[in-house]
Amino acid sequence: MSKSSHSQSPSNKAPNSPVSCDDSISQKTRRHPSGKRGQQRRDLILDTAADLLVEAGVEAINTNVLAERAGISVGSVYQYFSNKEAILTALGERYIQQLSNNTITALQQDVSGLDFATIVSRVIDPMVAFERQYPAFRHLNAGQEGQITLAQAAQRVEQEILTNIYNLLLRVRPHLSPIQGLQIARVMKALYKGMSYLIGQEQEIHIQGGDVNSLIADLKRMMTEYLEKNLG
Image (cartoon, rainbow, N blue to C red; front, side, top):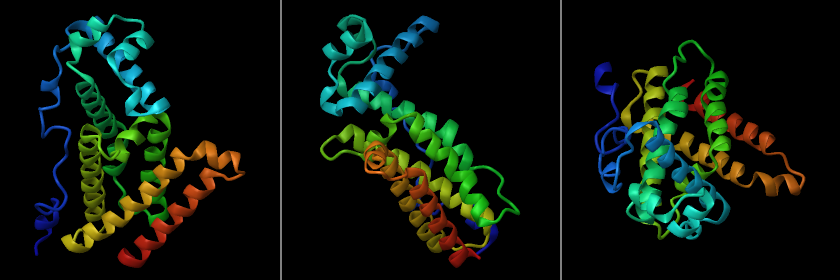
């Protein structure tokens, strides 16, 4: 198989980036913000929804509570979003875009000539920082059972991460087979999900005397050792 045949994710294995492939999310909003003021109002609604999501889960989000928390009228919420699902879907879209802008950049960086430990740190550290900065992302990424909107948003995030891990592996080892590349990518993603879980439990772990940063360092070492074993 030629090198060029490995330059893209295998079909039906690691889907294309979700950021640009689906316009259905945007179509679920009632009104597109026009001008700075409209965008600020829409951002306020989504910021407030994110806070409620972190505090009490999906059940806490309804238009009345959201409007009261944001200090706006219920009618203002309905100007931009037709229902709760539309708010959650737009929130998922926004986090996917933030993930693309802030985290996927780490997976797309030039890692040529670097050892595996350095590659892991350069990629993982900004991803961990992203999750700590945007805790609502973890709720979307968890894909809570029974919440179709969250599950769909989570699936899109998973695809984005998997595709970019796979492409990074190809930059490190251009002749890596698709099967092996996807297997390694999935293991790396699973270890990262473990870090995400630890971040979500950070307060509880701290109360119990644990150190999440130390646990994340252990998982990074596991990543490094796995890469050295399979790509070294």
